[in-house]
Length: 65
Image (tube, rainbow, N blue to C red):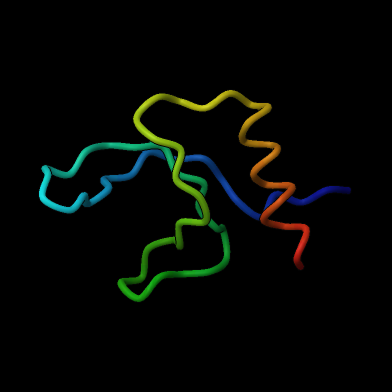
């Protein structure tokens, strides 16, 4: 059985010299960042990515484990 190691969520992303905006991110279910929230593994931008694009990113990220 395949277990999910990451999940797709919307996060506020800080941008240099610009206002922060909500963007889609692939976040880890187990690893935490310094502030205690889930660690972002990959940013996708303001538009929701396709399932194919998310699956490809997960495959690349989790292939190193």
